[in-house]
Image 1 (tube, helix red, strand yellow):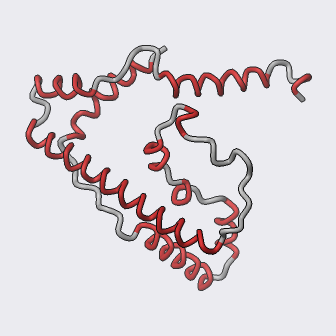
Image 2: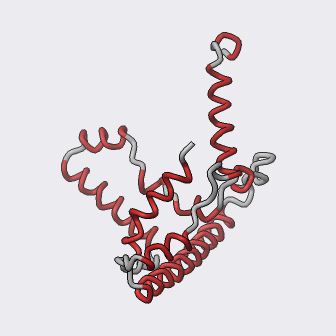
Image 3: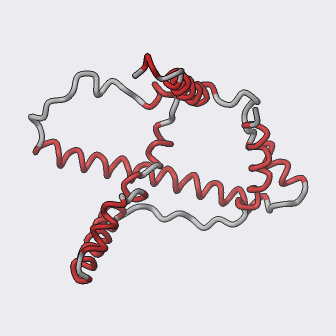
Length: 179
């Protein structure tokens, strides 16, 4: 296939390498300066400094508590599975890859939860074919499973003042990411 693709494979590999290079090195036009964004918003009286700092601190505390919750949940899950699947063979080299090998931060990856966001079309078609009682039972089982996965998760604090930085943030982001 590689011999007869008229350069498609090379273009695909170049595109993937470009993404990985961006993740490793960051944007070519510099970095996004959040302190300058904050100071600029203060200078034009766009936000209340005390309220914004309190919101930012509460968001930091929430993220730390969420990280601890996630680590505890992962430890409990691994401890529960450890006794049952202790004789499972591990593929050689499977444990050697880390997110930093690809220029990614581990916390960024933890924020992505594919299980909750993706639902295949096949599952939706199966739900359409079920009778209403079976479909409701399946929906309730999914709801219980979701509640079990999120039990004890810290609640995100209310944020209003920080949202006022959105327009300036988007403008700075566009300039940093522009090629």
